Image (cartoon, one colour):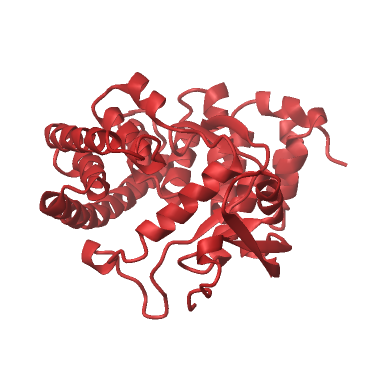
Length: 350
């Protein structure tokens, strides 16, 4: 038995064969809830070990909650920065690293760690910036050639990091006006893709209120299925290579879409810096997408059942049998989403 104290838990974490995930789960039970208020050391130790064992998301959660309780703690700032880097968010990690380097009270060992992490952040950002510059140039050229709002909104978004806010706003204005013109055409007024693009354009222009009014939340599975298939059709002939998106030789081009329906929980996402949605049903959808054939939309049994109960649509869910989900998450029934018009088409080659 482990006593419900931070010291007792830290003693167990010091063992070479410590079961870190099991101990973390134990410390999240009501009887151990008080250990987190006994100083920042437990947050720090858990975060360090989780990073070492390859769990950056869990490490980020532990470090972020620790900083809520112990603001400015340098060890937790370092752990949060390391978790952000390992999660792919080098931009936010750079802020934490700079805050650490600006301090004059860091112990030499921690300053050395912070300097090493700063070097990694700069290296990652430098490599990414070169690719982003190429991506921005491709998107901008495509938009200038055709006026298509898809490359236009991508160019406007990338311009924030590459070309500056003035060029981003100029591109966003052009995209906004183009989308508004398209929405005036018969049958286009409810086009989800156009409305989402318009919402993003207004966000870039600083109009948060109008942007939120232009985004649509899926009211039902029919709306979700409709967007999924229209998105797949729109990207069928997309030339990934022309936009600098290089695939390995053993990979087939194409977009994969995984769909599932179920209750989710809204909360703050420390990686994205905004509210996001969490829960087992989010995880299930995320595990369906990697096993989906490129160019297809695979759906869960729950999604297929919900769709079958909805009247007045043309969608069909074709049973694919019991399929293993990604990362050994589960083995469950999967279906291929299609429409009656497309039902005779075979699965794309893998």
